[in-house]
Length: 390
DNA sequence: TTGTATGATTCTTC
DNA sequence: GAAGAATCATACAA
Image 1 (cartoon, rainbow, N blue to C red):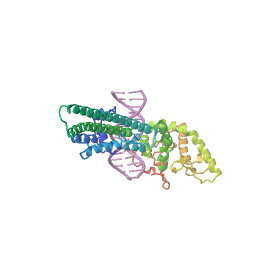
Image 2: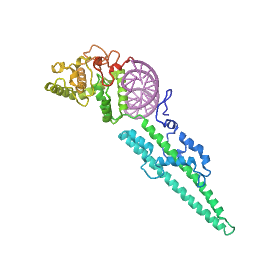
Image 3: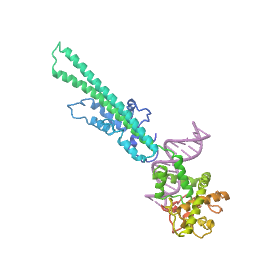
Image 4: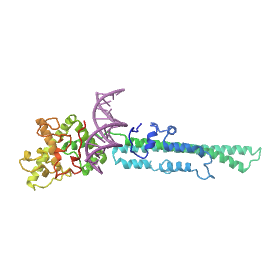
């Protein structure tokens, strides 16, 4: 489960553990004993050795030291540090502050606290039982001393045996706790890896960008960062989203038409206002002043798109490239709406006034963006080389 | 339960 | 290294 078959698999370092750890729902220490997690296996294999002499006079058991160190590192033993384990810290760092991950993070901390509490309760119980039993044995020996002589050495030996027995129980407790923490960690990392749909708002933001940049849906790094910030996702997620979107859009334009219309209509009014404002602004100022709006980093090439000539909109003879990138994108939206109202061919090339998606015959975004002198901020759509599939 | 949507991963190409 | 393409795995709706 969770492992992909037939291919190499890149992933977090806990991959091996994650792949074999059972997906337990409860977090009791007893459940934790069932794990076959790699880490746990090593603990179990060493247990037989640890029962003997984990106490005072013997050199410190390396296994016990490992357990203690791990419990300390995970914040289970030692001073309370709010569940601030390495995993939790890593998770917090990876979360990028998104609310969902924060919830997961707090969930992790809550469960770790639970484990910590169980551990300390059990540890206390064992210590108490050890003391009680020692007292009990001492009392018995005292009583026996009335009938036979008992040397201090014998008493010491008995106490030593009791302590060793109880320390082996403690060892098991520590092992179980470690296993529980490991399971929790693996489950937590699994949860991070699990696919989650983006929020509706995030999808809307991405879609709005995509459909308003249909002529060149290749956001620059800056734009990706901005989108990522807006959507509370990572830049690579933005890249993934656009990669998926471009391919799926190309594969089934018809299916996405409705969606395209929706977003186009949504931003049409804004687009019209923006265009008018930009034109106004441009006329009153310098005709070559580029727009520096929020999307200004997209130097959308447009010489391949007849509609990009703003002449048809304002009567001026100035090109879309002079308008500015954000206006350019708005024009994309606007023209889409215009085209919708006028009706257009659903096909890729067709004979319609313009191809609404700026896809070339191969399904690429090439024709709208092929000017040799103008390149995309990232990589021009010229890199869309083979769109013949499907 | 099943089909579809979708985010992620991997491989290939340039 | 970025993008396309194929695929996987999971979420989600019917």
